[in-house]
Length: 230
Image (cartoon, rainbow, N blue to C red):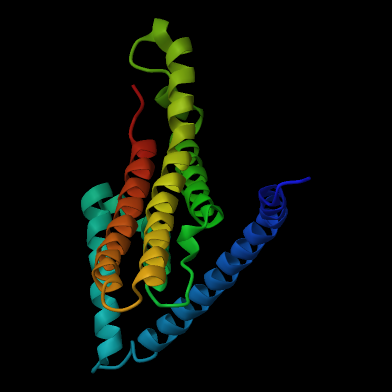
């Protein structure tokens, strides 16, 4: 006689891929929703940009965008202004995605590893494109180390280090947001009133911190590719 737990295990394994597909579809749907929200927000924020008396939304967005621009310049220097659109886009998208998960019934796209991997790969590819564009073939010096006779060993070490960057960016953001999402689901399942509120307030702080860390690391990586190799 077959034990009933074997049936439960069989159906759980059978339905797991379906659950993963549904979660991936949710991430894609919420990603497009956030893109549309940011697009509409930018339209409303800039509709009175030529007016002598800007409205409150424009003032609010100017503070946010101005703060990100100042951070980019302070971290990367004046030449970092050319990377401001990329950095600001990643920061706003990740921040809004993180905060979306605090709305009951909504799923944060950054709690899906595919979304965080896409953002990390964009930073990784941009870093090396900028490096080769700025230094030409001399960019290879970044992988050779300071001592010429150690160059063959340092090359593989540096390559592994650079390949670990998108992995760390992906897993750090995904792990924090997915973990917070699971904790919220557990609290809402056990005690749906008042108790999850402190976790939601902490989630706001986590959302800002994770967006800031991702943005800061992206700036550091791109800035590193612009420096001269030794």
